[in-house]
Length: 345
Image 1 (cartoon, helix red, strand yellow):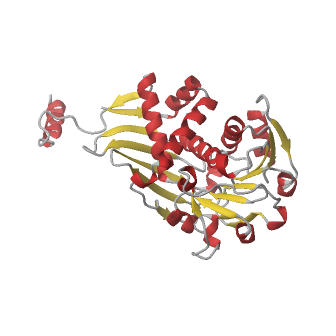
Image 2: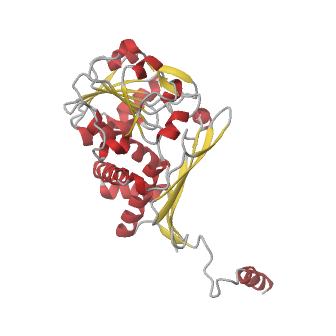
Image 3: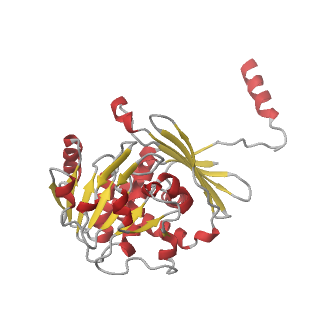
């Protein structure tokens, strides 16, 4: 039988484990999988683009398990009462193809994105970073804030969004977080001034310049999340030229990330090489670093594996018959015959 985890099950898992602890476990699982990067079957995600959004499939396999995620990105969904991003995924064994897990991944994607951001910032940001600017206060914002607070020790959060209601929402959700001072700013310039880390997580599907070169300060780490499909960016091209750039999977990021603005031979470093020690992370105090993150399937693979392991241990979710159980595996037709006999009776 296949274990099924819906949104309520995942919410119970978070409540049981604790959000901070779950982010830590998820960041560690993703880092461990990145360190065995060469073992994975990898490919850019398969994307179906429209004028108003994108629907994507993201597969990955380590030769033992296979996972995939279905995910959309529709910036106008909020006007329809729907999340901008919705996702689900599955985990199966490679030796039989049997599905072990079918899981919600909307909430889980927010968790894995935040965990990946914090994991990447450890070797890329200044180790004494305490102040983060957060540009964009939508569905991802609180998760990013808490991941950097709990995993990196960020204690001041400077926020800005063109939607004042989004900023008020974040303050309501996180205003009582111990040790986290939240400062509401009038614009992006004010928010990033003096920040050690700048996280951009905006949703418009457009070429945008959220950060411009005049906003840069020596030693900044830029965690750029919103530029994640063709024609969608957040950083001015000159910002990228002044920084060392780190990516997840270069063939995918060249198409979808902020670096789509740069020539195809502009140097970037894949993050797994930093995590394994093959390449250096931050090299000097005044260096500007950019994590041009678009999200990669191995992160979702890690997330599905962790959800499966924790759900098994905690007894969460339910078992469903997603694929047939047959006395004779060659007699699939018997299922339809049994149904016909039941109906006739």
